[in-house]
Image (cartoon, rainbow, N blue to C red; front, side):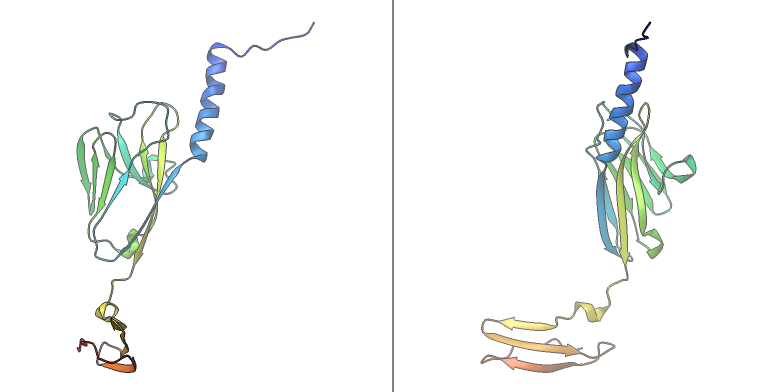
Length: 178
């Protein structure tokens, strides 16, 4: 006698849940942030890849790998604001806003915005890259263009004087001297 397996009810639901969860993991959104030391940045996590209503769910921000409660940095309930050190979280329902103030090199890394749901939580990957602060030298134009005039400049370190490397055209442009 042949035994037949009919996947209905609870077993069918579990199979559906496993397939849905695996698809969500594959389609995880990623946000990439590039800022400088000392800057403030607000990251907006939205468009959760889930098949259910999550506006009123608790949302959180965690460090990678975000597999245990100890990785959770901060949580916020629906329409709540929560702060921890230099990080502020605002859960307005649709969007989880994460604000870093006075970015530091130590803030660089992989994080996740998460939303608590039945089963496996939904995540959005957040990659934060923090560059060294811009020096004054970086703000000085390396060249100056006015119509047909092009004057290529070079500054000496540390931002001492600007030296004319070459001139093309009829007139000169105004130079910033430091």
